[in-house]
Every structure is written in structure tokens, then in C-alpha cells.
Image (cartoon, rainbow, N blue to C red; front, side, top):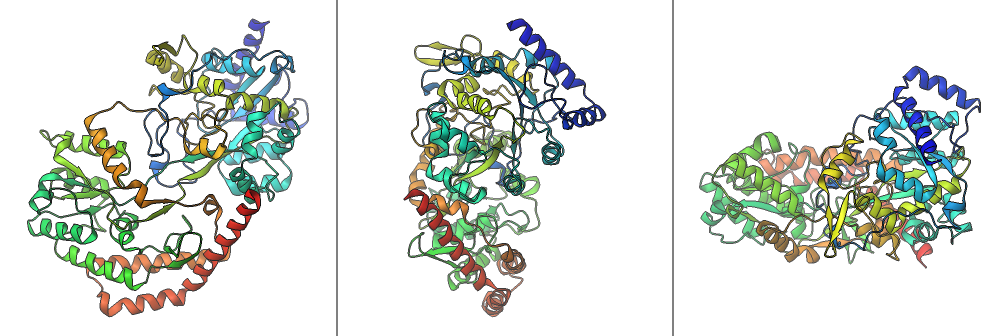
Length: 627
């Protein structure tokens, strides 16, 4: 029986791999006529028009690449997380217990995720982790995937009534439309009707933060149309990496700690013929590095109100839960800009600001010592290590001890919600057995399921030695090759985005709090080195004082659509004026009033009021859910 099941699955994958677009369309037409059923038995065929060509999924809700760190390495998250070798003891995925999945009908589940390759039918059929998942959940999994036009393909399949039984999306507006159209199962109704069957999912979807997102996307805290996959990464801009010799020549044995000291260092470096500082700036289209290094310590900001983080351009008055005020054209901002203009005029800021490419031109200048300090959001060890390693490779004879990492300047407060929804996982109403799909998801949420995905099969992907997990790197390399991933990462490629959008393991079963589990995933640790100890010590010395984690409801604050045009106009005004003030093309004292007046005329007061109103609404939503 087992051989027959595997043989049937192999045949289905072989057919899938050979499908042309024309055949897929024909198959879609057949399925639309009801000749094939979704979530059905062993004879169901999969519908796929293109095999995926990449494995890296886009960071759809966060533009900065740092937000989507490789799962095989330590990420930017700074919350304490246990190492992979310190995880709770892994258990080999056992067959479903009697009275559980073993006694339930075995069904075929079509599972689709963006961005993995599924054209190796023989290898997929023999995938030991996939097989173990199938045995534990008592299901057969048919993998489907797209790279190009993913959302269009999902929309087409939903419209035709042939969507996979569980699929992921990253276009939240389209997902909200499908909810309104009644195209999706209410997962919450199924789970809440049988919490004993789905204890982990029941805990997850009834967390107040989860219900908060339901209110935004489904219109009700108790309507759950998606398994939310959350990303968590605490990053910040502002820290500077110095050449030790340039810093010491300017009279500083340790990195400057105040804006005044930093300006003094930079101007002295400029006087010696070395540009004092290069802040990453995307040719002055990206101001956050300058803003966090110079303006945040003074309690102000020069950036415009934004539709990124809605509080960009604003600062709290009397605490984060009170009123927020736009500070972009404040007198405090004007004062800091004057300091920056003085630095630029004295060579303290490289004269290529706004012209040079950050990485193709400015970075080599820093590596060679023509620039004394580089600002690039150095908020985690990997960023610093890689930057230094590249510098050492470019300039033989250097060691990591030739560089010094500065922290955020005294007085800095960075306001952030270091988490966001990365993916939705949904079950369409065409799926005939959503309860069995949720059995499969419930298993993957268990500690045993998570261990299976990230540790592998005991005896094949890892062994135990003295209480430690010892990975077989060759086995993991072969595991990745099944899906054309050859970097040796320790994860089952198809399923690792299901709960955490950064492909990290989570203790969803043992952690009583879903939100806490999402903020503290299990991140593989890198080996201890003197450089790691040094960088970690610097980050730890200021993080808790400088980084302000905003309440969860800030993550659902959004401007009304009618503010979009005003926000775009304010950004245009800022990018037209701020660089000119810094570089001396405009006189700050003579032209500041005109800048502020243009802001007022563009409607900044309305944006400020809209933010505070949206914040109040978000707070009320969360308060009603959280009691």
C-alpha cells in the first residue's frame, strides 16, 4: 500500500513537471467543468502552468533587504532567542496517533507557495521530510509553485474554481478582496468549533494581536480567513563604522557619543584631507541614515511624513500613546541642519553626497581610507562582519581591530514596530476538506513538526551527541538540491514560510503566546569570535535605551487614501530642499521660512491630524479586543 501511494504520487509529479502552458489551460478547463475535485483523493491532478525559477521570496511588506535575512545565518533580530542546538529535544515525526489523523480520511492536498522549484519529480517523491509530514498528518501533498505572475495565477485559479487547497499570497489588498468575495474558508470558524482537534491553531488565532489583524483584514476580530506569517527583525539606522586611525587622528580614542562630538570629529577629519563621514543615502533619495545619526538624538527629524512607517516625520509629544507632531520643518530640525551644513563645508561629510553611488563608489573610498566613517545601519553583527571582511579583502594587511563601531548618539530614540505580516496562507472555498488541511497545518505548528522542518529526520539530517544537535551538512545539502537550493540551509524549502515570514523555526506549541513566539523565533547562531563579542557588546550597550518598541496597534495605523497625494507632495518638497540645505546650495537662515510655508500650504496640518486620528482608531480596536 505504501509503495502504491508513493508510485501514484511520483506519477502525478512527473505529469506536473511535463505540463506546458497549453496543457495547463486545458486541464484548467476540465477542472472548471467539475471533472476533477479539489482536496480529493489519489487520482487528483495538479494544475500548474509554470515551475518556479527562484527560491527567495520577496520581502513584500518591507523594502529594506535586511528585513529578509537568509535563514541559514544569524538575522538582524536582537531579541534573545535560543540557539538551534538549544531547542527543545526534537522528536522524530511519528505516524499520527490512533484516534487522531490516522483515523481520518487520507486526502490529497494541493499546496502552493511562491518561489520554489518543483521540477524534480523523482527527488520530490522521495523527499524524506515531505514523506514524514505526509505520514504524520495522514495526507498526500502535491506541491505547486509559480515565480512569474504569481498573484495573477492565483487570481485566475480562484476565479476558475481550481485554486490549490492552501496557498500563500503577499498582496494584502487582493486578499482582502477575496475575503469580501466569499472565496475563502473562515478558518477561525472551523478551528474554534473544535479546539481539542486544533489546540495550537486555536491558541494562535485567539491571540489579541492576531484578532487585531483580523479586524483590519476581515472586518471582525473573530473572522479568520488566513494563517498570518509574521516577520520580526529589529534593525535601525544611525550607527557608524570608523577607521580607527582616522578617528584617533581626530582626537578620539573611542567613537563620539554626542552629535557635537561627532560633528567635531568629522570636521577635524575633513581638515586632515579625509572625508569624515559617508551616510548611505541613495543619492539623497534616502535620508534615514542622516536622520537617525544626527536628528534623532536631538528629538527631531528631517524626513517627510510617509506612507511607509506612518509615524515617519513625526515625534511623540508627552509619550508614544499621546499626540504626535510633524517635526520636519521645526526649529530643532533647522538647528541640526545648520550643523550638518557646517560639517559638509568643512569636509566632514564627503562632497560626493547625492552624487556617488553608496556601494559602487563611496564604499571603496571608505575601504581605502579616503572616507573615515561609513553609516549603513550597523545594527547587527552580520552587517558589521561582512562590511569589515570586504574591507580587509580590499586592503590586505588590515584586521578587524583596525575598525571601530560607534553606537547611536546620546539622546536617540528610535520608534519602531519590528514586526510585520509577510504572508497570508489561505484555504479557498473550493477545497472540499478544509478540516484536513488544517490538520496538516496543526501538525506543522507542533514542536515535532517544526523540528522536522528545521532539524530534519533524526539519523539522516542530524544526530545527537551529549545533548547537542549535530547536523549532517551533506544530507542538508542534498535536501536543498531537491528544490534547487544549494546553500546548505537547514530547512525544508516548501514549508518554512508557513508561520514565520523569514523562514525561522518557532515554538508555537510550547510558547503560550503567539505574538511572543513570532518576536522570538529560533535563529541559528553563528560561532563565537572576538569580533562577534565586540560588536554584540557595542549593540548591547545602548539598544535598550535607544530603541522604543511601540505598542502592537501601531502596526495597523494607516493614513486614509485621500492623504496619499499630500504625503507625496510633502516628500517631494523635502527631497528638493533638505539636500540643498546640507550642501550649501540654499541658505538655511534665509530660506527656511519659505520651506516651512511651502509645507503648510501643501497640507501638513491635515496629515498630522490624520495620523493622530488613525492612531486613536487603531488603539481603540486593539483595546476592545484586549480588554
